[in-house]
Length: 119
Image (cartoon, rainbow, N blue to C red; front, side):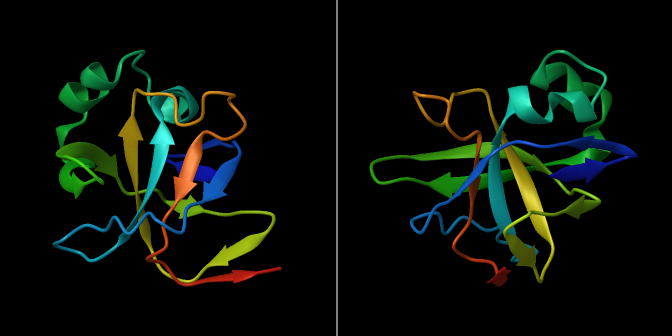
């Protein structure tokens, strides 16, 4: 569950042991979420509109994959919670317009760079 500006969204997340993405400036771990999941936190239908209309809420984070380098826009949530794990440090939410899982069984990837405790 992600909370931002009094709004809440929930979806299934996968703990990705290969996701070491973190913001190089704040050192915060980064959860990757599909725009379809987090878009209700913003009034805009498209990610580009949300970024243009709320420039102070988004940062640009570089990321490196197995075979390429790219960048994603991210925002700071007010709170992140889960039924199965506790988050011990702040995170950022990076947004992708791509579907993370072809079968749709999860829509967010939790990073391996944050301290968590399982219930």
